[in-house]
Length: 436
Image 1: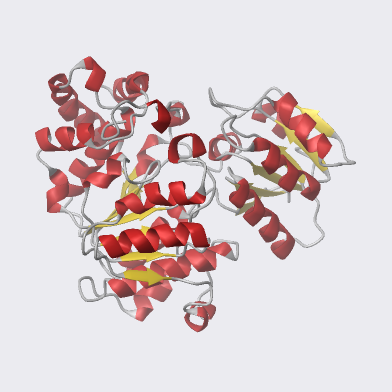
Image 2: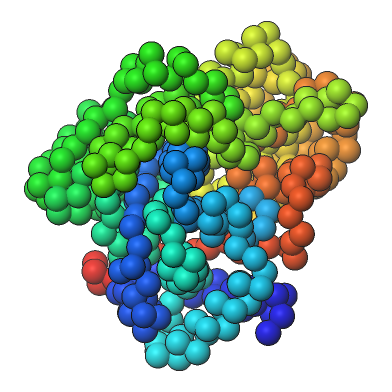
Protein backbone atom coordinates (compact mmCIF):
# COMPACT_ATOMS: atom_id res chain seq x y z
CA UNK A 1 0.00 0.00 0.00
CA UNK A 2 1.25 3.47 -0.86
CA UNK A 3 0.59 6.59 1.18
CA UNK A 4 -1.83 7.82 -1.49
CA UNK A 5 -3.71 4.51 -1.25
CA UNK A 6 -3.81 4.74 2.56
CA UNK A 7 -5.28 8.25 2.36
CA UNK A 8 -7.77 7.07 -0.25
CA UNK A 9 -8.84 4.26 2.06
CA UNK A 10 -9.40 6.78 4.87
CA UNK A 11 -11.41 8.88 2.41
CA UNK A 12 -13.59 5.85 1.70
CA UNK A 13 -14.52 5.61 5.38
CA UNK A 14 -16.43 8.88 5.06
CA UNK A 15 -19.24 6.87 3.45
CA UNK A 16 -20.03 5.58 6.93
CA UNK A 17 -20.62 9.09 8.26
CA UNK A 18 -20.23 9.86 11.95
CA UNK A 19 -22.24 7.66 14.26
CA UNK A 20 -22.13 8.95 17.80
CA UNK A 21 -21.62 6.08 20.24
CA UNK A 22 -18.90 3.94 21.80
CA UNK A 23 -19.86 0.39 20.76
CA UNK A 24 -17.89 0.31 17.50
CA UNK A 25 -14.81 2.00 18.92
CA UNK A 26 -14.71 -0.34 21.91
CA UNK A 27 -14.99 -3.36 19.61
CA UNK A 28 -12.34 -2.09 17.18
CA UNK A 29 -9.99 -1.21 20.05
CA UNK A 30 -10.51 -4.69 21.48
CA UNK A 31 -9.64 -6.50 18.25
CA UNK A 32 -6.66 -4.13 17.94
CA UNK A 33 -5.37 -5.27 21.35
CA UNK A 34 -6.86 -2.54 23.57
CA UNK A 35 -3.83 -0.24 23.21
CA UNK A 36 -5.48 2.40 25.41
CA UNK A 37 -5.13 0.13 28.42
CA UNK A 38 -1.38 0.73 28.26
CA UNK A 39 -1.59 4.53 28.19
CA UNK A 40 -2.35 7.46 30.49
CA UNK A 41 -4.58 10.28 29.25
CA UNK A 42 -5.80 13.79 29.86
CA UNK A 43 -9.18 13.95 28.10
CA UNK A 44 -10.20 17.42 26.87
CA UNK A 45 -13.71 18.48 25.83
CA UNK A 46 -15.48 21.83 25.45
CA UNK A 47 -16.87 24.15 22.80
CA UNK A 48 -13.95 26.49 22.15
CA UNK A 49 -10.30 26.41 23.20
CA UNK A 50 -9.90 22.62 23.22
CA UNK A 51 -7.03 22.60 20.75
CA UNK A 52 -5.18 25.49 22.37
CA UNK A 53 -5.53 23.92 25.82
CA UNK A 54 -4.32 20.57 24.44
CA UNK A 55 -1.32 22.29 22.84
CA UNK A 56 -0.48 23.98 26.15
CA UNK A 57 -0.72 20.75 28.13
CA UNK A 58 1.42 18.95 25.56
CA UNK A 59 4.08 21.67 25.62
CA UNK A 60 4.22 21.70 29.43
CA UNK A 61 4.59 17.94 29.79
CA UNK A 62 7.07 17.68 26.92
CA UNK A 63 9.15 20.43 28.53
CA UNK A 64 9.07 18.38 31.74
CA UNK A 65 10.76 15.53 29.87
CA UNK A 66 7.81 13.28 29.08
CA UNK A 67 7.08 11.63 25.76
CA UNK A 68 3.67 13.11 24.97
CA UNK A 69 1.09 11.95 22.46
CA UNK A 70 -1.29 14.57 21.06
CA UNK A 71 -4.59 13.69 19.37
CA UNK A 72 -6.61 16.58 17.91
CA UNK A 73 -9.01 17.37 15.10
CA UNK A 74 -9.62 18.70 12.54
CA UNK A 75 -6.28 18.99 10.77
CA UNK A 76 -5.52 22.24 8.97
CA UNK A 77 -3.50 20.87 6.05
CA UNK A 78 -2.11 17.36 6.51
CA UNK A 79 -3.71 14.30 8.10
CA UNK A 80 -0.60 13.69 10.25
CA UNK A 81 -1.39 16.78 12.34
CA UNK A 82 -4.06 14.74 14.12
CA UNK A 83 -1.60 12.23 15.60
CA UNK A 84 1.64 13.64 17.02
CA UNK A 85 4.30 12.53 19.46
CA UNK A 86 6.38 15.32 20.99
CA UNK A 87 4.81 17.57 18.33
CA UNK A 88 6.12 15.47 15.45
CA UNK A 89 3.26 14.42 13.17
CA UNK A 90 2.93 10.74 12.45
CA UNK A 91 5.03 9.82 9.40
CA UNK A 92 3.58 8.70 6.09
CA UNK A 93 5.30 5.34 6.56
CA UNK A 94 3.53 4.85 9.88
CA UNK A 95 0.18 5.94 8.42
CA UNK A 96 0.55 3.29 5.70
CA UNK A 97 1.60 0.63 8.20
CA UNK A 98 -1.21 1.32 10.67
CA UNK A 99 -3.88 1.54 7.98
CA UNK A 100 -2.59 -1.76 6.62
CA UNK A 101 -2.75 -3.33 10.09
CA UNK A 102 -6.22 -2.08 10.93
CA UNK A 103 -7.86 -2.67 7.56
CA UNK A 104 -8.21 -6.47 7.96
CA UNK A 105 -9.76 -5.98 11.40
CA UNK A 106 -12.65 -4.08 9.84
CA UNK A 107 -13.84 -7.34 8.30
CA UNK A 108 -15.15 -8.20 11.79
CA UNK A 109 -17.92 -5.63 11.34
CA UNK A 110 -21.14 -5.94 9.32
CA UNK A 111 -21.71 -3.06 6.90
CA UNK A 112 -24.36 -1.39 9.04
CA UNK A 113 -21.94 -1.33 11.99
CA UNK A 114 -18.78 -0.48 10.05
CA UNK A 115 -16.46 1.86 11.99
CA UNK A 116 -16.37 5.43 10.78
CA UNK A 117 -13.36 7.49 9.75
CA UNK A 118 -13.04 9.07 13.20
CA UNK A 119 -13.37 5.74 15.01
CA UNK A 120 -10.67 4.14 12.87
CA UNK A 121 -8.34 7.13 13.26
CA UNK A 122 -8.84 7.16 17.05
CA UNK A 123 -7.78 3.50 17.28
CA UNK A 124 -4.88 4.18 14.88
CA UNK A 125 -3.72 6.90 17.25
CA UNK A 126 -4.03 4.64 20.28
CA UNK A 127 -1.93 1.96 18.60
CA UNK A 128 0.69 4.50 17.56
CA UNK A 129 0.92 6.09 21.01
CA UNK A 130 1.17 2.64 22.59
CA UNK A 131 3.91 1.53 20.18
CA UNK A 132 5.95 4.65 20.96
CA UNK A 133 5.38 4.10 24.68
CA UNK A 134 4.07 7.60 25.34
CA UNK A 135 4.24 8.62 28.98
CA UNK A 136 1.06 10.67 28.60
CA UNK A 137 -1.52 11.31 25.87
CA UNK A 138 -3.39 14.62 25.54
CA UNK A 139 -6.63 13.38 24.02
CA UNK A 140 -9.13 15.82 22.45
CA UNK A 141 -12.75 14.91 21.85
CA UNK A 142 -14.15 15.16 18.35
CA UNK A 143 -17.84 16.00 18.78
CA UNK A 144 -19.46 16.38 22.20
CA UNK A 145 -17.99 13.91 24.66
CA UNK A 146 -20.46 11.37 26.08
CA UNK A 147 -20.86 9.47 22.80
CA UNK A 148 -17.62 10.58 21.15
CA UNK A 149 -15.26 7.80 20.06
CA UNK A 150 -12.52 9.23 22.29
CA UNK A 151 -14.62 8.48 25.38
CA UNK A 152 -13.52 4.83 25.56
CA UNK A 153 -10.54 5.89 27.72
CA UNK A 154 -10.39 6.40 31.47
CA UNK A 155 -8.08 9.39 31.90
CA UNK A 156 -6.01 10.72 34.77
CA UNK A 157 -8.05 13.91 34.51
CA UNK A 158 -10.95 15.29 32.48
CA UNK A 159 -10.81 18.88 31.23
CA UNK A 160 -13.83 20.86 29.99
CA UNK A 161 -12.82 24.22 28.55
CA UNK A 162 -16.18 25.98 28.26
CA UNK A 163 -19.75 25.45 27.09
CA UNK A 164 -21.08 27.61 24.24
CA UNK A 165 -23.59 27.16 21.44
CA UNK A 166 -22.25 24.94 18.65
CA UNK A 167 -23.30 21.70 16.96
CA UNK A 168 -26.81 22.11 18.42
CA UNK A 169 -28.22 19.70 15.84
CA UNK A 170 -26.26 16.89 17.49
CA UNK A 171 -25.73 18.09 21.05
CA UNK A 172 -29.04 19.81 21.81
CA UNK A 173 -30.44 23.32 21.63
CA UNK A 174 -29.73 24.46 25.20
CA UNK A 175 -26.49 25.07 27.07
CA UNK A 176 -27.62 22.52 29.64
CA UNK A 177 -28.05 19.80 26.99
CA UNK A 178 -24.70 20.66 25.40
CA UNK A 179 -23.07 20.59 28.83
CA UNK A 180 -24.57 17.16 29.49
CA UNK A 181 -22.86 15.79 26.37
CA UNK A 182 -19.52 17.43 27.20
CA UNK A 183 -19.73 16.34 30.84
CA UNK A 184 -20.10 12.78 29.59
CA UNK A 185 -16.30 12.49 29.69
CA UNK A 186 -16.35 12.73 33.50
CA UNK A 187 -15.46 9.33 34.97
CA UNK A 188 -15.91 7.91 38.49
CA UNK A 189 -13.30 9.27 40.92
CA UNK A 190 -11.35 10.97 38.11
CA UNK A 191 -10.68 14.69 38.78
CA UNK A 192 -12.29 17.19 36.43
CA UNK A 193 -11.13 20.74 35.72
CA UNK A 194 -13.29 23.31 33.95
CA UNK A 195 -13.35 26.98 32.99
CA UNK A 196 -17.07 26.86 32.12
CA UNK A 197 -18.87 29.92 33.49
CA UNK A 198 -22.43 29.93 32.16
CA UNK A 199 -24.60 29.00 35.20
CA UNK A 200 -26.90 26.55 33.39
CA UNK A 201 -23.89 24.70 31.95
CA UNK A 202 -21.82 24.81 35.13
CA UNK A 203 -24.72 23.37 37.13
CA UNK A 204 -24.77 20.30 34.86
CA UNK A 205 -21.00 19.82 35.20
CA UNK A 206 -21.20 20.16 39.00
CA UNK A 207 -24.07 17.68 39.19
CA UNK A 208 -22.30 15.17 36.95
CA UNK A 209 -19.04 15.43 38.89
CA UNK A 210 -20.91 14.92 42.17
CA UNK A 211 -22.72 11.85 40.84
CA UNK A 212 -19.40 10.36 39.71
CA UNK A 213 -17.56 11.31 42.91
CA UNK A 214 -15.15 13.20 40.65
CA UNK A 215 -13.22 16.02 42.41
CA UNK A 216 -14.09 19.27 40.59
CA UNK A 217 -11.78 22.26 40.14
CA UNK A 218 -13.33 25.48 38.83
CA UNK A 219 -10.94 27.79 36.98
CA UNK A 220 -11.64 31.52 36.71
CA UNK A 221 -9.80 34.11 34.58
CA UNK A 222 -8.11 35.56 37.67
CA UNK A 223 -6.68 32.18 38.72
CA UNK A 224 -2.89 32.10 38.47
CA UNK A 225 -2.95 35.77 37.46
CA UNK A 226 0.41 36.64 39.02
CA UNK A 227 1.96 33.42 37.74
CA UNK A 228 0.65 34.05 34.22
CA UNK A 229 1.86 37.65 34.29
CA UNK A 230 5.41 36.26 34.41
CA UNK A 231 4.86 34.34 31.15
CA UNK A 232 4.79 35.77 27.66
CA UNK A 233 2.22 33.58 25.93
CA UNK A 234 2.95 33.32 22.20
CA UNK A 235 -0.77 32.83 21.42
CA UNK A 236 -2.72 36.08 21.02
CA UNK A 237 -5.95 36.78 22.86
CA UNK A 238 -7.11 37.29 26.42
CA UNK A 239 -9.00 34.00 26.13
CA UNK A 240 -5.66 32.20 25.90
CA UNK A 241 -4.92 33.28 29.47
CA UNK A 242 -8.01 31.36 30.54
CA UNK A 243 -6.87 28.33 28.51
CA UNK A 244 -3.44 28.64 30.11
CA UNK A 245 -4.97 28.84 33.60
CA UNK A 246 -6.98 25.72 32.78
CA UNK A 247 -3.84 23.88 31.67
CA UNK A 248 -1.96 24.96 34.81
CA UNK A 249 -4.86 23.82 37.00
CA UNK A 250 -4.91 20.41 35.32
CA UNK A 251 -1.15 20.02 35.77
CA UNK A 252 -1.43 20.98 39.43
CA UNK A 253 -4.30 18.55 40.01
CA UNK A 254 -2.14 15.74 38.64
CA UNK A 255 1.05 16.82 40.38
CA UNK A 256 1.12 13.78 42.69
CA UNK A 257 0.88 11.38 39.72
CA UNK A 258 2.86 13.36 37.14
CA UNK A 259 5.12 15.89 38.89
CA UNK A 260 5.94 19.04 36.90
CA UNK A 261 8.00 21.98 38.14
CA UNK A 262 6.84 25.60 37.90
CA UNK A 263 9.82 26.20 35.62
CA UNK A 264 8.59 23.54 33.18
CA UNK A 265 5.10 25.06 33.26
CA UNK A 266 6.46 28.53 32.50
CA UNK A 267 8.80 27.32 29.76
CA UNK A 268 6.18 25.07 28.21
CA UNK A 269 3.59 27.82 28.03
CA UNK A 270 6.10 30.33 26.65
CA UNK A 271 6.91 27.95 23.77
CA UNK A 272 3.42 26.72 22.86
CA UNK A 273 2.53 26.68 19.19
CA UNK A 274 -0.99 26.27 17.78
CA UNK A 275 -1.49 27.47 14.17
CA UNK A 276 -4.69 28.97 12.80
CA UNK A 277 -5.86 30.58 16.03
CA UNK A 278 -5.20 34.32 15.98
CA UNK A 279 -2.05 33.50 14.04
CA UNK A 280 -0.36 36.65 12.76
CA UNK A 281 1.99 36.30 9.81
CA UNK A 282 3.86 39.05 8.01
CA UNK A 283 4.45 38.61 4.31
CA UNK A 284 7.75 39.69 2.70
CA UNK A 285 5.74 42.49 1.07
CA UNK A 286 4.90 43.83 4.54
CA UNK A 287 1.30 42.66 4.36
CA UNK A 288 -0.09 41.41 7.69
CA UNK A 289 -2.28 38.30 7.60
CA UNK A 290 -4.30 37.33 10.67
CA UNK A 291 -5.71 33.79 10.53
CA UNK A 292 -8.36 32.62 12.97
CA UNK A 293 -10.81 29.74 12.90
CA UNK A 294 -13.72 31.67 14.44
CA UNK A 295 -16.38 29.15 13.47
CA UNK A 296 -19.15 29.91 15.98
CA UNK A 297 -20.65 32.90 17.79
CA UNK A 298 -18.35 32.72 20.80
CA UNK A 299 -15.31 32.39 18.54
CA UNK A 300 -16.39 35.41 16.48
CA UNK A 301 -16.89 37.49 19.64
CA UNK A 302 -13.47 36.45 20.92
CA UNK A 303 -11.91 37.44 17.58
CA UNK A 304 -13.64 40.84 17.66
CA UNK A 305 -12.33 41.48 21.18
CA UNK A 306 -8.81 40.45 20.23
CA UNK A 307 -8.81 42.62 17.11
CA UNK A 308 -9.76 45.67 19.16
CA UNK A 309 -7.13 44.80 21.78
CA UNK A 310 -4.15 44.13 19.52
CA UNK A 311 -5.02 46.27 16.48
CA UNK A 312 -7.05 49.21 17.84
CA UNK A 313 -8.51 51.31 15.07
CA UNK A 314 -7.44 48.86 12.37
CA UNK A 315 -9.94 48.02 9.65
CA UNK A 316 -8.64 44.95 7.84
CA UNK A 317 -9.87 43.42 4.64
CA UNK A 318 -12.07 40.57 5.86
CA UNK A 319 -11.97 37.33 3.88
CA UNK A 320 -14.80 35.24 5.25
CA UNK A 321 -16.03 31.72 4.61
CA UNK A 322 -18.38 29.81 6.91
CA UNK A 323 -19.98 26.37 7.00
CA UNK A 324 -23.71 26.18 6.35
CA UNK A 325 -24.44 24.34 9.60
CA UNK A 326 -22.99 27.18 11.68
CA UNK A 327 -24.86 30.31 12.77
CA UNK A 328 -23.37 32.23 9.88
CA UNK A 329 -25.82 35.12 10.09
CA UNK A 330 -24.70 35.91 13.64
CA UNK A 331 -21.04 35.45 12.69
CA UNK A 332 -21.50 37.97 9.87
CA UNK A 333 -23.20 40.44 12.23
CA UNK A 334 -20.24 40.27 14.62
CA UNK A 335 -17.37 40.31 12.14
CA UNK A 336 -18.62 42.51 9.27
CA UNK A 337 -18.39 45.84 11.19
CA UNK A 338 -14.69 45.19 11.86
CA UNK A 339 -13.71 45.40 8.19
CA UNK A 340 -12.88 48.12 5.69
CA UNK A 341 -14.09 45.80 2.96
CA UNK A 342 -15.34 42.23 2.82
CA UNK A 343 -14.56 39.40 0.43
CA UNK A 344 -16.74 36.29 0.71
CA UNK A 345 -15.40 32.93 -0.43
CA UNK A 346 -16.68 29.36 -0.27
CA UNK A 347 -15.14 27.06 2.29
CA UNK A 348 -13.46 24.02 0.67
CA UNK A 349 -16.16 21.74 2.04
CA UNK A 350 -19.37 20.10 0.93
CA UNK A 351 -20.97 21.96 3.84
CA UNK A 352 -19.98 25.47 2.78
CA UNK A 353 -22.42 28.33 3.21
CA UNK A 354 -23.33 30.17 0.02
CA UNK A 355 -21.13 33.30 -0.25
CA UNK A 356 -24.08 35.17 -1.78
CA UNK A 357 -26.08 34.53 1.40
CA UNK A 358 -23.13 35.67 3.49
CA UNK A 359 -22.98 38.84 1.40
CA UNK A 360 -26.62 39.64 2.18
CA UNK A 361 -26.04 38.98 5.90
CA UNK A 362 -22.98 41.26 5.93
CA UNK A 363 -24.90 44.00 4.13
CA UNK A 364 -27.63 43.82 6.77
CA UNK A 365 -24.97 44.70 9.34
CA UNK A 366 -24.99 48.22 7.84
CA UNK A 367 -21.57 47.98 6.27
CA UNK A 368 -20.60 50.97 4.12
CA UNK A 369 -17.53 49.39 2.53
CA UNK A 370 -17.53 47.19 -0.57
CA UNK A 371 -18.60 43.56 -0.37
CA UNK A 372 -17.33 41.16 -3.03
CA UNK A 373 -18.17 37.53 -3.70
CA UNK A 374 -15.40 35.31 -5.07
CA UNK A 375 -15.55 31.80 -6.48
CA UNK A 376 -12.61 30.60 -4.38
CA UNK A 377 -10.21 31.63 -1.64
CA UNK A 378 -7.46 31.81 -4.28
CA UNK A 379 -9.46 34.44 -6.16
CA UNK A 380 -10.07 36.34 -2.91
CA UNK A 381 -6.35 36.38 -2.12
CA UNK A 382 -5.55 37.59 -5.63
CA UNK A 383 -8.01 40.49 -5.18
CA UNK A 384 -6.47 41.50 -1.88
CA UNK A 385 -2.75 40.99 -2.47
CA UNK A 386 -2.06 44.74 -2.30
CA UNK A 387 -4.09 45.29 0.90
CA UNK A 388 -1.96 45.95 3.96
CA UNK A 389 -3.95 43.89 6.50
CA UNK A 390 -5.97 40.73 5.83
CA UNK A 391 -8.18 38.90 8.29
CA UNK A 392 -9.03 35.37 7.09
CA UNK A 393 -11.62 33.66 9.25
CA UNK A 394 -14.96 31.92 9.64
CA UNK A 395 -13.89 28.29 9.39
CA UNK A 396 -10.79 26.29 10.26
CA UNK A 397 -11.15 24.63 6.86
CA UNK A 398 -10.74 28.05 5.20
CA UNK A 399 -7.76 28.81 7.45
CA UNK A 400 -6.15 25.50 6.45
CA UNK A 401 -6.61 26.31 2.78
CA UNK A 402 -5.08 29.76 3.36
CA UNK A 403 -2.03 28.22 5.03
CA UNK A 404 -1.54 26.11 1.91
CA UNK A 405 -2.16 28.81 -0.66
CA UNK A 406 0.04 31.33 1.12
CA UNK A 407 2.68 28.62 1.59
CA UNK A 408 2.76 29.08 5.37
CA UNK A 409 2.57 25.31 5.78
CA UNK A 410 5.55 23.09 5.00
CA UNK A 411 3.36 19.96 4.86
CA UNK A 412 3.57 17.85 1.73
CA UNK A 413 0.03 16.66 1.27
CA UNK A 414 -2.34 15.05 -1.19
CA UNK A 415 -5.42 17.24 -0.76
CA UNK A 416 -5.93 15.81 2.72
CA UNK A 417 -8.16 18.60 3.99
CA UNK A 418 -11.14 16.74 2.52
CA UNK A 419 -10.69 14.10 5.21
CA UNK A 420 -12.25 16.60 7.61
CA UNK A 421 -15.65 16.08 5.96
CA UNK A 422 -18.20 14.19 8.00
CA UNK A 423 -21.93 13.70 8.32
CA UNK A 424 -23.25 12.83 11.77
CA UNK A 425 -26.58 11.28 12.57
CA UNK A 426 -28.50 13.78 14.73
CA UNK A 427 -29.40 12.50 18.18
CA UNK A 428 -33.13 12.95 17.60
CA UNK A 429 -32.99 10.61 14.59
CA UNK A 430 -31.42 7.75 16.49
CA UNK A 431 -33.47 4.71 17.42
CA UNK A 432 -30.83 3.39 19.81
CA UNK A 433 -29.62 5.94 22.38
CA UNK A 434 -26.67 3.77 23.33
CA UNK A 435 -25.31 3.67 19.79
CA UNK A 436 -26.51 6.73 17.84
